[in-house]
Length: 78
Length: 169
Image 1: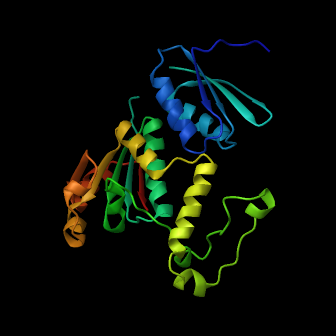
Image 2 (image 1 turned 30 degrees about the vertical axis):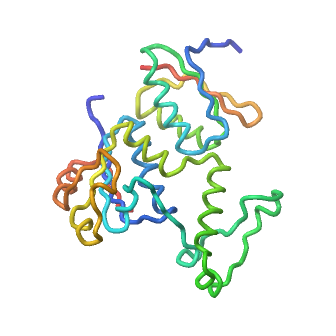
């Protein structure tokens, strides 16, 4: 699997709805267009929530992977 | 985005359980680039106080699971049957239930109401306090957090008329 370098990492493990989304929003605001945010979360609801959030805001959900209940999202700022 | 969606919420309840949804939805809406307004009326007004003292009452919520926030996983999954005679009459029962709910939320990584309220303000969610209810219940502006607007039904409806989502909570 090719690794995409991220400009910022955000750890939302252990946090529950809606904190991962709120923290992702704050983190993405601090980036420049085209930069990548890597967010990790353990909330299973964050899978659908991140997809919905990206769809609504227009930021690109580049990838979602899961390893032993830890979800990793790569988001490119639009 | 050209077409900004708008969310309009009426928060009419101030208990710990009912206090969450308005702040969760408004902060998330703002995080999704929507505009959001919460109109606080009747028992929702205390959610604007500097110190939120929201409690939960199992007696008036018969479907509420009564589970312990500590102990083994099996112990925590037990839903304790509490007779009405106890939940309604034992002094301090609501305080205990409130403490347990707060503890459970904390353990599950859920934000506090104060935290979510702060995020709302940070993201530009507008809070409007119902002027009439303030008069009726004797609330003063000094008791509330900064940044609150004051208005009545017409103020809310003027905004809600153009809202894409309107909720009464």
